[in-house]
Image (cartoon, rainbow, N blue to C red; front, side, top):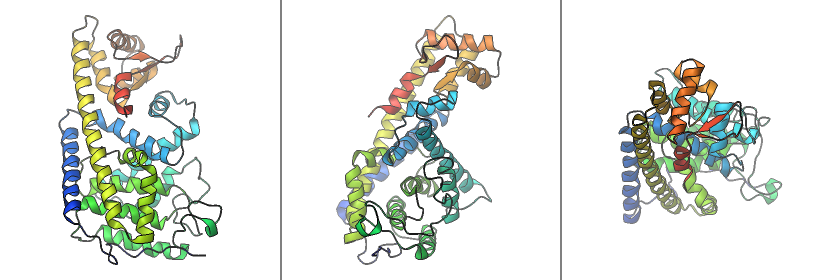
Length: 366
């Protein structure tokens, strides 16, 4: 069978040429990412945005691979441990766990660096207890895989043979830690293509490859936290996403991929800034409304402050978050419900579930 073995980065034959059009596009994307970083830094608590943005990226990146879980499904599961699509929700939660693990390791003084080993550990967490859990989670593949078709002979793309994968991943890792004249934003896009082309795992490559972009943007200092949900832009142009990856392999069209990728970065960053501005305005407005209410209590204000990281709450969760008695937590929930901040969503008399729906609506808009 014929398989594709990519040359090491950076692109050399043919090289990536950053002409005037690409330079201008990079400048626009870089500026948009900078504005997103500023938007995240100007709020009192980074968790106001981070919780929702990370889970939005996790939901959409998983959707690209066929899951059906929504953001509402995920946040409800985190609050209640119940889900109508438990398998799909678990896949999304695994993505969140994999990203949190990888970020923590990179930040630790003695943690794992950005490397094949780190990506393997992230992959192990991604595949834990879900579809693909039997396909060597956390290990570089030792057998041939393919994309599309029923066998390598009729596949749309056949990645490198397993015996060369460790060498290719070592080359990629070396390049990530080398000095390179290409802008970091562009390099992150090239690294994604290379990872997807190597396809080092038997399953879950797409999600780990998109997670790699997130890690690189933070590692190289373009963002202080993972606020760029790039998967949404990829999903909006999903066929072109796959076509651009394919054109690099068949025609060496790095310029076409880089153009597409930078357009997606700019679009995603602009989306993120708009969402951040709306969320900030919503939280300020709701806090003002709550403080003006006669039934407001200190626990109610404290609960509002925790809603961006817990947009779906139950009474037991409110008791835990506030470290108060059940009657005090009930009054806090009632105060937020009275002014329209929380909405009861379960329709039950007992074990009721409350959502900060306007916050979730901002995140799911578009």
